Amino acid sequence: YFPPDGFASLRLVIKIGEKWPQKVAFYILEPANSYRMYINGQLAASSGQPGMDQASTLHSLRPRTAEFIRGEQEELEIVLHIANYIDREGGRKRPIYLGTPNTIKKMRNRRIVSEGLIGGALLIIGLYNLVLFLVRRSERLPLAFSAVCFVFGIYALFSGERLILLFFDIPFELFGKLWFFQYYIMVPAVAWFIHCLFPEDGRLPVYKGLAIFSAILAGLTFALPFSRGVDIFSVKSAM
Image (cartoon, rainbow, N blue to C red):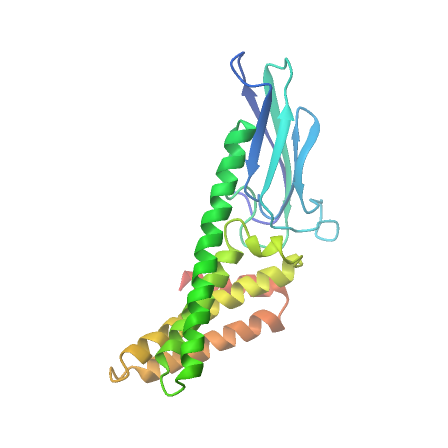
C-alpha cells in the first residue's frame, strides 16, 4: 500500500478493435483529490490542479465526463496525474467508466435524477413537518422528524454527484467541513427523533451525551484546519 498523501501518475492502455465507435466517453468519479486525465496525449478531463507539493496543488471534488474521438487509433493510452495532500484517502477511490457518449450521458443523468429526487423529497418532507410543528408547537415529534429529513436530505446533495456544487461554488476545505458537520449531526438528530418517539424509554442521558459529543466534534471541525478535521473523522470512524 502507498501512503494517501503525495502525487502519482497512473497509466492504462486499452486495446480497441474495429467495432469500437469513433467517439468514446468517460465518466470519472473524482480521483482524490485532484487530477488531470490525458487520453493519447490530449487533456480530456481535470478537477483541481495536481502538484508535486501541497502549495502547488488545488484540491477539488467534482465528477466529470469526457469525450474522445479515437479516429483510426487501435489503442487508448489513459494517463492520470493525481495528487492529494489533505484527505485520509488518496488516489482513485471510485471507478472510471468507459462507453459510448450516449451510454455515459444516460448513466450520469440517472444518477443526478435519482440523487436529486431523494434529496429533494427528504427536504420537502422535512419542510412539511416543520410547518406542522409551527402549527402545533406543543408536539416535538414533527420537529425532530423534520431535523432528520433535513440532515439526510442535505447529505444526499453532498454525496455522489455532489449536486450542491451545481448551485454553489464551494471551496474544497469549506465543502469538506460542511460534509463532516452534517455527518456528525446525523447521530444526535436520529437520537432526538427516537427520544420523541419513545419519551419514556429512560435513555435521555445517553441521547444528551451523544448530542454533546457530536457538538464537540462539529465545533472542532470548524475551529481546526481541515486536515485536523480529517484526523478527527478518521478516529471517529475507527471507533
